[in-house]
Length: 154
Image (cartoon, rainbow, N blue to C red):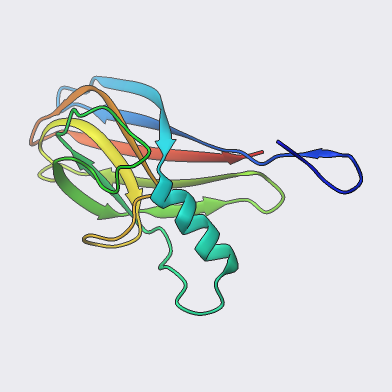
């Protein structure tokens, strides 16, 4: 929190959360929610997207999932053990302080013991804005997993 020249305290925060919806082939559905960490590289991305007039970074466009279980740290720049990556849908309603990225891994995609995820700006490599780990989601070949990352600015 900083104080501006008029003595008013100002601050800005960004908070991320992930909602995972796991639809199993037997028809059952599990929904989980987990807060995630904005990475140092994610803050650099935000600053460069706002301030650079040239060589601006590509927009956040993909969601990746993996099997890594290493604890989340701000200095990380990617998932630990990436399993799959897919284009994400971006959504923001003007006048709100919330934006989301959502994708669904359909049957045959990202099959395995998923334990980490993040939003990034490329189909491979690229910059990750965040990373989150969670209790294993065992996605069978016939299952569907939808990931909805919600970011709130305040």
